[in-house]
Amino acid sequence: MEPFGPQQIGKVLLIAGIAISLSGVIIILLGNLGLFKLPGDIQLHGKNWHVYFPIASCIVLSIIITLAMWLINFFKR
Image (cartoon, rainbow, N blue to C red; front, top):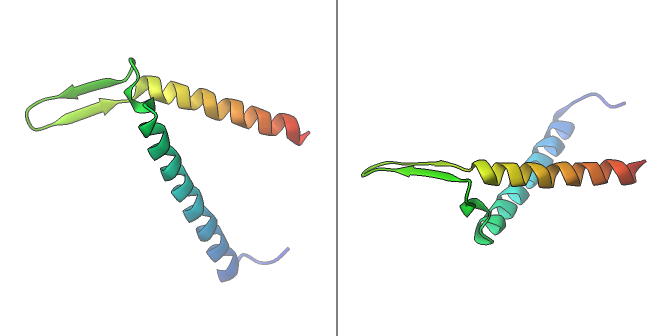
């Protein structure tokens, strides 16, 4: 096993950057499909402020991620 040096740190940072970028693209696409405007999402706003609690959207995302992880684990065996 190689020691954890600058090469490995660079690879980890590159993979983390790609993962963050892909997550951003997925969130933008899901927002365009209407995911973050579900009936259970709470929006409070006043004259100069706005607060958004995406409760239903978080539940839907949690179910999707759980199913994806379950499928990955199922087919990995």
